[in-house]
Image 1 (cartoon, helix red, strand yellow):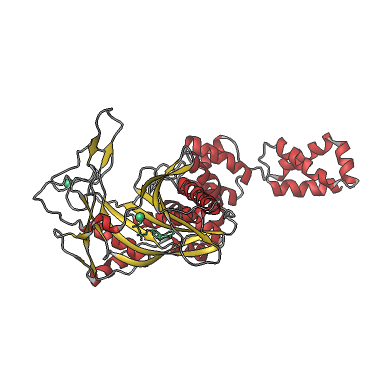
Image 2 (cartoon, rainbow, N blue to C red; image 1 turned 45 degrees about the horizontal axis):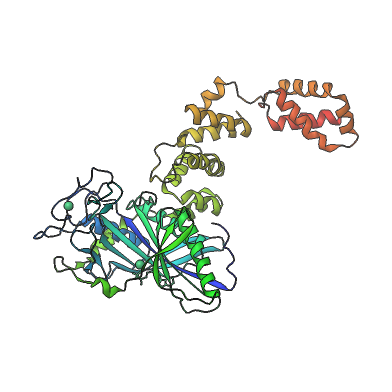
Length: 487
Ligand code: ADP
Ligand code: MG
Ligand code: ZN
């Protein structure tokens, strides 16, 4: 969530088309595995290779996943959705058409709540439809010919289309994060942009602030991280402003983002729908949704990020900001709740997760996994650490040292404290001795302090902490110093 840049009199208008690969076992219309990473063409059969004379059979699970997503985003589910053929020729599409949905999609008219610096905004969804993925052309393996890998051909996708409701590049990234969180909570897509299981095309136009008509848009492709989506859109907005202010016109076209050069380049002029010669697929029956089944899917929906955020504020009494950060990922929210169940100090646990733990996760690049199995510190271990602070065994400062030990070697915080002798000194006798020694060692400073130089108090605290290896109870040190220095 960064600040919106200033585009002067121009207002950006952005709509996103997101393709999300569904986490089904098998492909959309055949029994082949939908898993990523096999030998080229290992996951193929006559159906997904486009052989003549075979018929597609719909994967029920994929319909369930898409329906879950539609319900979680408040879409309406029309009684009938229809499969359509989108015709184009490309070697990675062996049938010569993609099975998709056109004018009768699975779901319409939903919305995604997006957290922005100005508060929560709802980005409307136009539609969600299902379609099959294409294969992959491999051009760089040989100089004189290309190869085709059809493992991905027929893998189920959802296309989630937003209305042109987004008003800045940062907001586009925030929208994608919210959407990804929903997909991850629903366990229908892993949301990994780097690996392409969540892909985004950005439609961008500009208009004069205060006007409502839509300008001519370009569509940007080839962005494979939240960061590149944000950069690409920002760069495209600036390019369009420059063109228009220079007296030119925007042409409707598809442009490719080049992350290395930080620019977008034209790829092709935009096809119109009639170029694809869409028509209903005669091999597949229309998808008729049974309201009872839809209700069953609705009842099975898990708690979603927004509801969980509100519950964290209500039940755990943490600030809305904390709750938003913690619930942005399902695994982080699960972690928080497990730790709080072990030791009910939600605010302190939240601070540790948002500070130390998420920093580690970022450093170790664990951000993109759906479920973090390699958390450096388990929830109950963090809970024990916070409990040690709360019962006065260690200070917050020493806890940082213990935490580092836990990350480095794992292990129980209490045994680390014992082994390293980090237990807080609360014994007033020992602290008093250290205080006396410090006062005796610096008669000049004591005199200055007593003549009104209050700022020296921190110096004395520092000396006592140093003398006790940072283990003295800070409150006891403060109290003793105040009374003795007053003397
Ligand atoms: P297509 O399938 O040809 O790309 P759609 O009508 O499905 O066309 O629109 C795709 C996306 O473009 C949607 O997300 C929509 O919100 C967005 N969009 C449409 N017109 C504009 C515009 N003038 N400026 C920005 N985005 C737009
Ligand atoms: Mg498009
Ligand atoms: Zn197959």
